[in-house]
Length: 65
Ligand SMILES: [Zn+2]
Image (cartoon, rainbow, N blue to C red; front, side, top):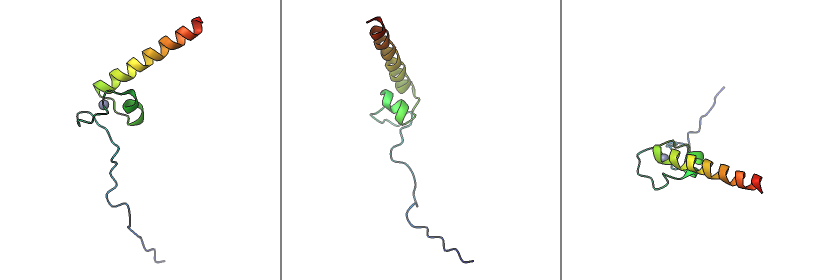
């Protein structure tokens, strides 16, 4: 059985879309960076918690009518 492994394509398979803490990426500080890029640095976490609080406030307002 001769399986020819074609190593074409994925040579350097690093993601360009990665955001990590302290890399100076301008996307830090957005809740989307927390959710989409799974960056849990201080800035993104703060944005996420703020977003959650805002969401809860809006739901409370809607519930109140
Ligand atoms: Zn971040």
